[in-house]
Length: 212
Image 1 (cartoon, helix red, strand yellow):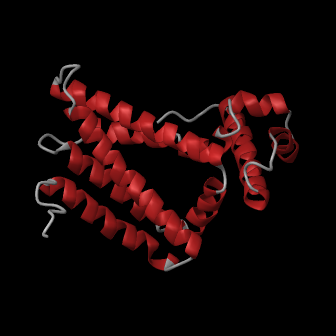
Image 2 (image 1 turned 90 degrees about the vertical axis):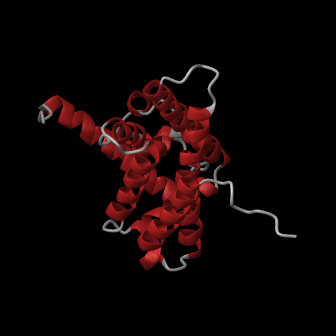
């Protein structure tokens, strides 16, 4: 792996400093109450510099998750021969939950959940981001399977997989905001993730059949 040069390291440091300053302000006052100019002052840079690194105010928060899409697609592309998209996706999602357990997952999720949940602008942006992930995943599945433009299966599969991811995020945020069982959050996320993936693996034909 190539080591970044001095200029690139300085850019990474500046970017991180701006994002950290923004998160501190959002945590203290909420996303909607903070201006980009205030973030610039806190990070000791100009407002123009903030926008050079983060095209929109929402990016100040969501840039922390920007690697997710490429990491997900890479996990699908590089899965072993014979492994399904479902299993590769499940392995990727659950491994991220396990890694998070060593980084005070509950407290980080609690802070993020409050910031996002209190801001309609962030909630709207998050829906756009998840839709973009689903589109990219559907394109990859269609390419691998040779599906035609009228074949709905790649989009249905991608939507179902991203629904698992979305469901786990919502589950974690609800738990974190109530502070219920934060020490068990990572373990419980894995359990719930396995249950959701099992439902997709087994199919919906026998699920929620009306009994009376």
